[in-house]
Image 1 (spheres, rainbow, N blue to C red):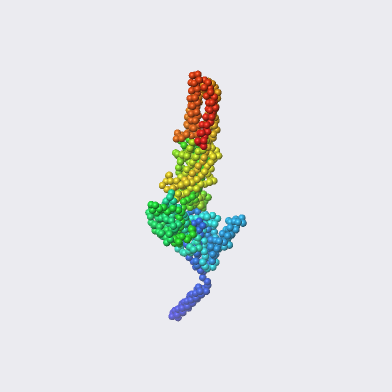
Image 2: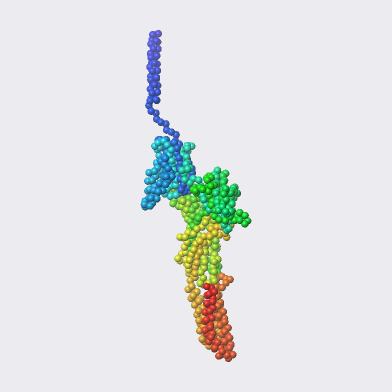
Length: 639
């Protein structure tokens, strides 16, 4: 029993030794495998950066991508989020001189155009030769995206701008990712990484700097300019200059409530004024108000230079080039054209006329810009009042107008506005209305030429919109439907007017001259008058003096009837017309002839027949000469 127990214990110890040996062997094998067999590299955590910004027309943003590692994959996605922006992405080769690259592109583009080549073919070829990667429209809509595997460690450069084929502008969303493929779908979220840094020196047109002219005159002793939207913390710098030997207008910066916040200060040299102001909060509609009235007897007149910039202190030296987005809201030029299609009536007594005409206006406003990929449309069409409602809801001023000499209601047959992606707008309206004609002058009637005018006033002061004639649209139709008048000339001009506003507004004047068809007056008035006068003269050959008295009396009544006929077409004027003078002259001559024939008849009855016949012989030729002299005097008087 004891022996058997000892044997069993011995066997158990042997098994444990073997198990221990096996465990130690496995442990050593594991350690050897860990240190000698290559292990898989853990994937680095994906890095994503989101940048929200804005690119203006002609502007290029250059981003530096520092410390990229060999084997990393760069992903980039750009999308326009406002206005008309069509983004274009370019990954530039390390060490590339951006300025030299732009110059080379301009030179090659000019050569291509001069040689009759296609720039749309040349642009991608140039981009392939000089850049690592680029893209224009691979993302949805007009978005851009690119993917590039980093070949070696180093600093790379990414450029974002408007598509080269057309100049666009607006806000953008830029996603950058390292080893983050989700960026290409535009759905990746920022991880807080700083992959790209904006290179302000290499970028073009970042700081808004703008130069303009401010004009002060006796007719307009003050004026103002609005600022575009500003951000909190931005600093405005203004440099205002004029001749050193003349007085300089003063100017003040006002906030959106017209509260003054900063006055101009004299510069170091005469003829210069400066202003510096940091905006405490983001705001719209700050304005600069300029006053030329220095004192009761002194008015600073002339044209003065204004240089304005945001976050650009060098503006105060007056030696900074303009660039970047528009800082000052300049008056928007609005081309206005009118096509006269019908003259429905001319009421000479009421001194007005009716027309059917088509009005067209063209202007550019960046606030109207949009990207076609959002609506998949080349333009937006607004009918009737839809555009006015859209502009009101979007707080976008547009060149609303009134017809100054309109009488009564304007009946609009068609009205629509077409807005194009870059912000160009075309307004078209066909209307009919009655218009006042205060320039009528009937002194030479019916050989008169009358001035007709359609005067269109902008509702906004000239600081907002300025009209310009749209020459190719200003026309008069060939068939106006008016039989009495013939249009002989038409002109279009723009003037300033104060009659309908406290501030000068721009007025578009479409004027045309018209003369009468004379056939009616020749055959219905002048020819009958000539026949009547000729018959009256022939009667002088008759020796029946009683009949001559009857004829002279009848002629007198005829002239009275003619006077009423003609006066029925004209207002009660404070002067005589040519026609009035002819009829009045005929009336007076006929009256004298009647008196003469009555006297002759009385003398005949008293037996003085020989004396009567002698006088009558002279009167036979004096009568027509008297008429001719009267007509000649009237004609010379109205020439």
